[in-house]
Length: 212
Image 1 (cartoon, helix red, strand yellow):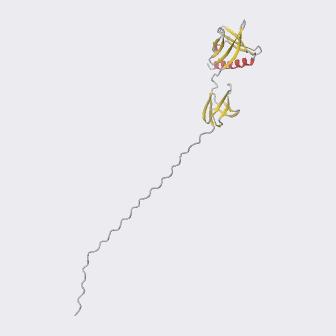
Image 2 (image 1 turned 180 degrees about the vertical axis):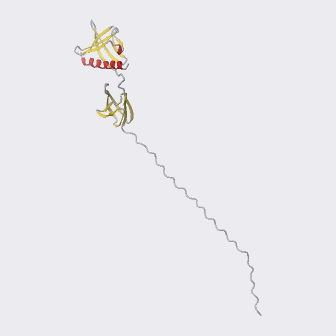
């Protein structure tokens, strides 16, 4: 008798394949910020920086007798401390000035066309009888004689002087105003002081006449 065929098991339900896992999301690390360079800080100047100009272009400038150029100019790295400036322009009186330089910039303006006058001299006024002591002073505004003798004192504009001359040999400064003539001498008989005073005042008178 033939053996009975083996029973075949009924197929079971198919197993579901699990879904593939999603790849992990990787968060990129932030890049480190680039270092910010520190701002450059300029060292403060240790010397003076002189910006020099004049009302006459091309004036020659000397600092401590050393020629530095013609205006307008900039003189850098001038050592702090006292210095002597001399500025000259053709056709004008030279200008000399002592300055105290500090570190940093500074503007300097030289005016050749400006009337500069601040002169004074002690004098004796000779009268017909006797004399009186006083002081002559001059500015661009005028010539002034101050004395304890109030009848002798006067003040007059430079352009209004009718006469103004110095006799160096006689050591006398002669001044003529409207209606009166003065003869001044130096208390010590020094003609040089009278001459210098006359020179400075006369130069200012001429400049005022040329530039009214």
